[in-house]
Picture 1 (cartoon, rainbow, N blue to C red):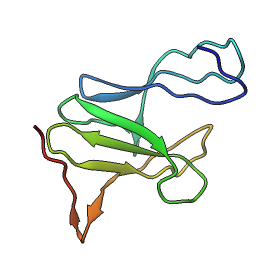
Picture 2 (picture 1 turned 45 degrees about the vertical axis):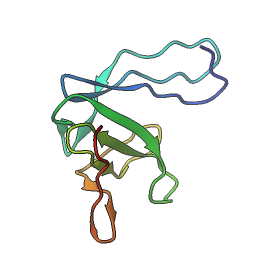
Picture 3 (picture 1 turned 120 degrees about the vertical axis):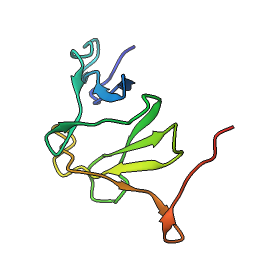
Picture 4 (picture 1 turned 135 degrees about the vertical axis):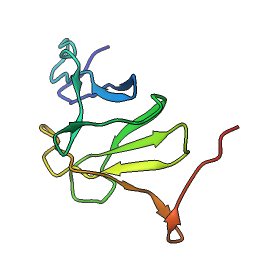
Length: 108
């Protein structure tokens, strides 16, 4: 896989803990070794291990936030990026809400 002056992240959940596999900044660069993603100084634990992490500027502040869909509960966690895109930092999460209540996606 080639990258052209872009930053790419590979997110995965391993034993319930989210991992950032690394970044590639220029064509031909490989990914850095994985690191655990932290929120408030603690590893982000997604409870069951089946998670769907995604980076997107959810709140329109110009920094990519971490969105994590949870398999067990069908909820979406929103970790707002309080750092930068190059050095993201997260401090807690909120669940996505619709109509004033926590939204869920049913399984099956």
